[in-house]
Image 1 (cartoon, helix red, strand yellow):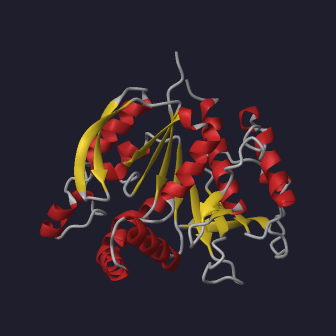
Image 2 (image 1 turned 135 degrees about the vertical axis):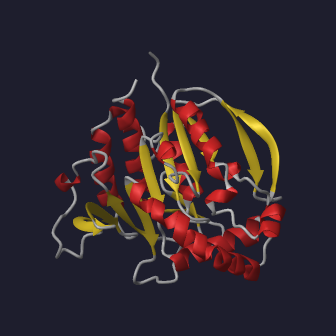
Length: 313
């Protein structure tokens, strides 16, 4: 038998950072090996119809979740799909696209874990949970620069969507294997530098690398830029990996080499001369920045995807 595609889910609210995370992971795995799908394409209504009906794109009733689930099931077995296309720029639907899955499939969007059948299709499930204040800044910047909205329009839309975010988006956190929270450092509360810390909740649903061998677990050691601890998330025990923005290249490289050592397929990723795109992010004024917390997050997720290829045929 040929190996079936490995499917990664990346779920989070609008402008939570899904596309940025996806791009880096696809770069790790090789763009030629990755099919990227956005579940926003499964909207039931276009922008004008949603306004007329008084429903937001975050509500399950505004999405063809049954078709999304069916398509995920087909992709999981390596079969092609005819995927709808929703244009965020125009707010209308375009001609559907014939999609044949590659070795890896990344599925990003708002409601990817909203049904049991959909959740069963993923090998790795990630949920993005930035602080709401930071997400609002990201959404204003994106929607004013790329989608033609004014800042007031964006903030009004976020307020309108808040009840659905609370009811339908955030509860999906419980189904994830990894919860990713990028947040500003204490000495840069406005994130003016564009560089953020990250907090990774690692649930025991999937086997994570044995990071205790290379990361401090002393709860009193606040000086280390990379720390591993125990906590509870949504009432359940979890490991928490924290990576500060001021982590040095030596600290980051040590952790990267450790993660890569378990999977030879990842060794090329840890060579920064071969892969200069590690952890690249766009700053507030459009400049390209290097984020070690982002690089390590992308690497850890790529690790799990490659690990999954070893156990499935």
